[in-house]
Image 1 (cartoon, rainbow, N blue to C red):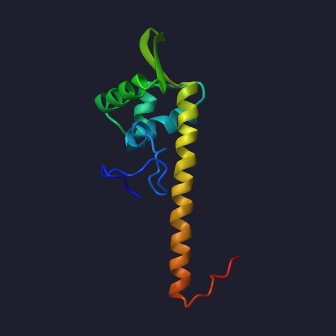
Image 2 (image 1 turned 45 degrees about the vertical axis):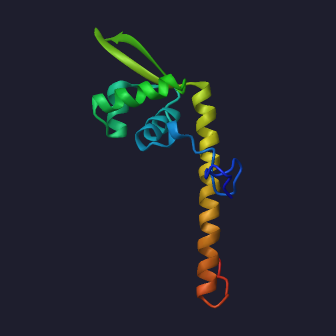
Image 3 (image 1 turned 180 degrees about the horizontal axis):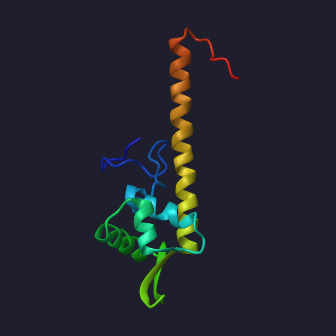
Length: 130
């Protein structure tokens, strides 16, 4: 349902307010997922490879994520070479989990509708479950 401004009302059934725009962008979702699965963090080069991004693209997305306090980057030296290690923050982990919960609801809503459509198309008979 929409209010008089034409925007969806907060709490509208299918508004999915929890789909955080900072996280929802494909590259940033890739970065966060990579960092969530590597608790100790990842070197910039490895993160770039895992996400399929260029140096510039990864740098820009890391900047957005750092400004939102979802990731941190620390510079150091390994084997005499400068290295940047990227890690997800506690806030980043929490917001990522909240984001996934909303995505799960999207999937549940869509699969419920698809199953209902499939059942109706079959003349009201439920599909047999295995």
